[in-house]
Image (cartoon, rainbow, N blue to C red):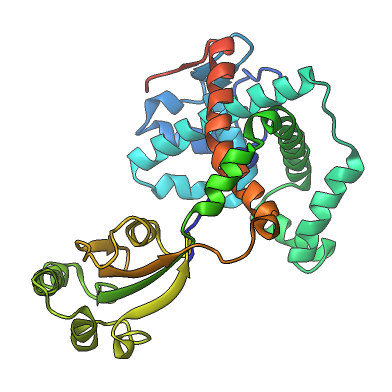
Length: 337
């Protein structure tokens, strides 16, 4: 199963906001006002008549009005689902959105200082790709109408996303460009692992059955660590129908293809050592590494992929360093609610 690798950049791109301050209160008889009013009965800080500041910088404030209006614009009619959420989840959603909006404003402000711009045709190109995913412009417009989301909002979202993406590409490029040594180190990494595993499924079982499944898995783990043959144990007890008859073996799994805890074990355990129980959303694994190896291709053939890989690894810490700098310059403050 592929590991989900989500870039910080893609998270930032989901939020759109102007760089100018928005401190107006929500207007009565609007969807955002009604939603904030209903939620404020249990979360008083959302009272639309008070418009509390959630994030403050030297350049702007992000208020409850900004957040509630953004959520209604972004989610459309489904924003009403906040009314049925657990209060702690609503609070987390509001504060996470407030911080994301504030960070987006900082990035837009920085992009404007750098003189970065985006043309209408570039925005149209982004929207066109969305149209094609949903069967054309007419179908997409109909979908938006049904969901209560405006095309103007999405156009502004696309514009701001492109603007920030260009800014990040410019300022991060010198930081994330890998050195020759980093490329060679990446080339020397082991890229494929052959493993043997035993799977105990919890998926499809009620919660009360899980302790018994874990206990059974621990008993088999003890036998494996005592020296019993992993292949035979897999044939007898594994619930992975695709591999159990092969003694639980999976050949040449690429690094990053498995869920994170399995991938980590496969590329860190000593060859032949049996892991502990590895819990995943669908059950428990016992894993043994049979073999690991490098990619057999020559360095120059792999160079483009290695450069991209090194850049991806360096991008997250570089982005975090940039945001720390922007926070400090802006005198970033988040309210306690």
